[in-house]
Length: 48
Image (cartoon, rainbow, N blue to C red):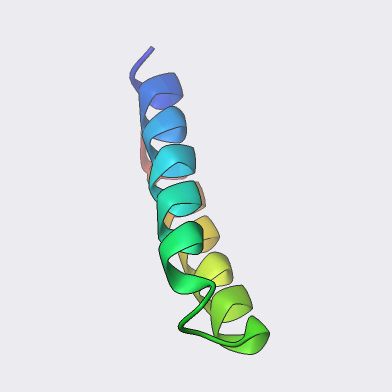
């Protein structure tokens, strides 16, 4: 249950982050931040 809530929060955070960042960053920066965020949440899921 905790893992599911972490995943949902992560998706919500990323979707909000991407909407805010689209006008500001170019595609390469957005992709890099997405990769970092994905790796961060995957690491957390492995720790759980």
